[in-house]
Image (tube, rainbow over all chains, first blue to last red; front, side, top):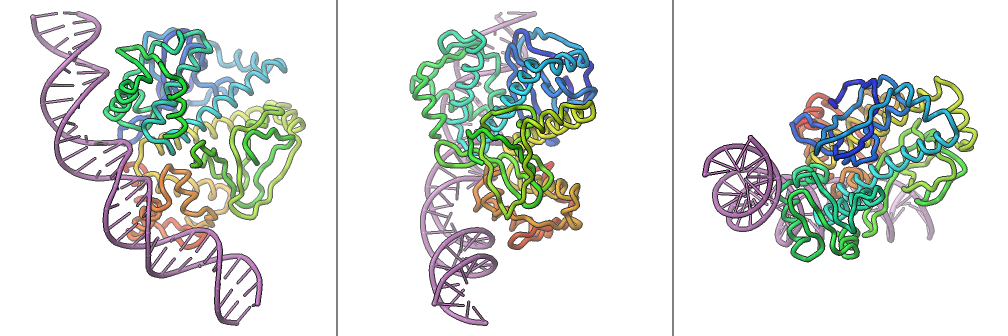
Length: 191
Length: 191
DNA sequence: CGGCCATTTGAAGCATGTCAAATATCGTGG
DNA sequence: CCACGATATTTGACATGCTTCAAATGGCCG
């Protein structure tokens, strides 16, 4: 999805990963959210019709999405009290997540940012039964993690290697495992 | 407002400034949004009842707020098509602003961050007739700007002084003036 | 097997942070 | 109304975390 294009359809991720991002005037890019299976892309389209979205979306892996007509979807999610409650929770938890990311990027150093992101991804995947005991598929390259965390790919690499050497994580091409949740959480909090 | 406390009322700012922020485990703080006259504090309470808010809010200056019963407000904003449209726009523009901030903090250096923030504040104030030709009251201290931008108060100071020496802005205790919008925009884009 | 892309590592530079002290401004009580 | 203490801004010197540039290594796919 390109920034600025209005959409007649609203999508959700069925399988695979994608990401929402902003392309800056100077060419750099900030990844705003990783979109995982079960996530809605463009949640504002639940209530906003015919609006251009102010960001772009790209797939990180082969992606299967579900497409819904925005008008029909809007009528559906506003139709009952239960639906409206659910929608409100989707918005609220999305905003809470974005707030956390801002604090992460604004106030933590590399170690804490990487640790937090890994823990967050693992938790979101676990809720969807896509994490096997801390081990999960990670289609994002280190450069993608960097663009999400406000760092350089090189520095993300150094940080990941550091965590691996300390025995906290393990990873290879396309796969990540968290070995020590406790110490990783501590790093996410402290650094 | 303290983080974690549910609220029976939803507030809007009538006059004065406030800010939404997260307090991190290590004591540091990230300011998420400056709340200006006309802004709703806690927009998720428009649709979400009896939910604890995941951030705190503090006044930056003597503050007058309007308080509304959350239940009545929710019924009101969902009552008509026009109201629902307005609400959707409030949510969407809030999310777009937060996305921009994340990109700002994640991918720009100090000069660009400060320039962007000043331009954004001036624009939001101008829409409310609170900017006199680029000149406006700024109750935030440099330390507050720093906590919003992911920088140090010292470094914000150096950056501001730099902009002043170049003749782009002017400021004294509690007041800020933008002298050269064009060059400031250029810095916000380029740096 | 060869080429492409991602990861890894090293060395050097720069932006920002930290610490400390001087100056300026504000609010308050005498 | 002034003097004082508290708080904010400003400046300097130095430390450091992150970036940049460059090259080597490794994995994957055609």
